Amino acid sequence: MLDTIFSQKQIRTDAESLQIWGKDWTNGYPVDPRAIVFPETTEQVQELVTYAISEDLKLVPSGGRTGLSGGAVASNSEVVVSFDRMNKILDYSAKDRIVTCQPGLVTANLQQFAKGQGLYYPVDFASSGSSQIGGNVATNAGGIKVIRYGLTRDWVAGMKVVTGTGALLDCNAGLVKNATGYDFRHLMVGSEGTLGLMCELDMRLAPMPEPQCVMVVGVPQVADLLNILHTFADQITLSAFEFFSDLALTKVQAHRGLTAPLTEAFAYYALLEFDESSLALAEEAFARCMDAGWLVDGVVSQSEAQAKSLWQLREGISESLASYTPYKNDLSVRISEVPGFLADVDRYVTESYPEFEVCWYGHIGDGNLHLNILRPEDMAVEEFFKHGHGMSPKIFEIVAARRGSISAEHGVGLLKRDFLGYTRSDDEIALMQGLKALFDPHQILNPNKLLATPSNAGKRP
Ligand code: 2HG
Ligand code: ZN
Image 1: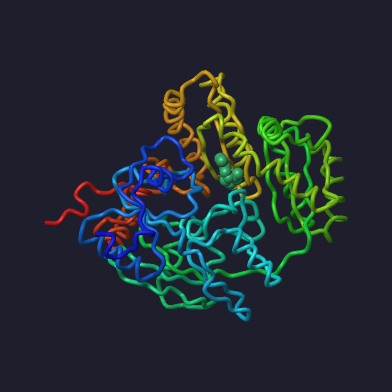
Image 2: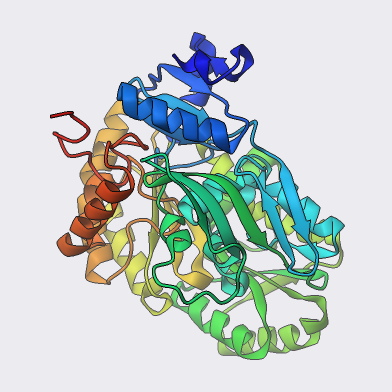
């Protein structure tokens, strides 16, 4: 019985809670967990895993539930393990610049804590006010500062994790150098809760950057986004290089009541962020791009408030599309492939479904494009998703032809599981299954996410 491990306040089984904690932001999957538990200690997590093994219970780890690939959806009577109560900062070492925290710590709270130390936690995205560090690590979250600071993986200095056998691994202990074989910390990063339940994380902090300037420029041709990126990157260190299409801008403006950044409309916009002290060099790069005809107009923030409102034009897009229940794809290719790739996908979708609006935006500076196909108002969600699923294989063929990835930063979860073969080889998938069988031999951890659970798995002889 779960109540031998957890107190009453740590278990929820009422219908409303099952619906809330049984899913993430992904649409389209049934939500049917049997219970939600809220562990408070590593020991409780270990006890839960041992209990799950003995009772053949399946566990779905759950953080801030902002995922978009169904990684935290419980559809099959699983027990959801919410880390909401394991949300504390346990230790801070100023000399190492390492924060030891529990996985349920909200990303924005880590950012805030870092600021309080005069430092910076650089992984950032629109959902940082809800997402949790554990979920960020489980999906190797990226976001808007990747070109300067890398992915979540780059900030994980160590972790304690309970595997599917109930073993507690203490991985890397915050060391910079540790040449002692396989690094399980990095194996856990991005494993989507399929190999272990993280209970403590050592997160590195960065020096606080200078105040930032934000520039938004209008770009008629998609290929010129790369010319602009390289012209600026040759001159200055960019903290962000994002893009969005005119349609994306229209949607976010309407949703948030924002004014247009420029007087004219352009097919695409790039949003650049850089240190304030680089402004003069950035203006030189801007002039060079203008002379070359790659950009036509631009605006640069004059205050922190203006920088924030320019960021809204990009960060508010995803939310502004929610009412269209869009068919989402999170794709990446090498940056050199971006223009050709975008044109290929655009051509395929608009030729196949001229009635669908296609909204492009994303982290173009690192090759990550978000493709949101919008549901026509008069089409039922189910029918629309059927068309979306029908389009996916062709879109993934285009990705594979350019040696890209079918999931850049949102993870595989349920949504991309059956398409993994477009990006990973059969040999790789077989190795992943082997690792899964080692770390989770009873197949109790986030079953059917990332990899399909073998049909005979977890059955006792
Ligand atoms: C973003 O970059 C997020 O805004 C969400 O990764 C992307 O909703 C999406 O497709
Ligand atoms: Zn993104």
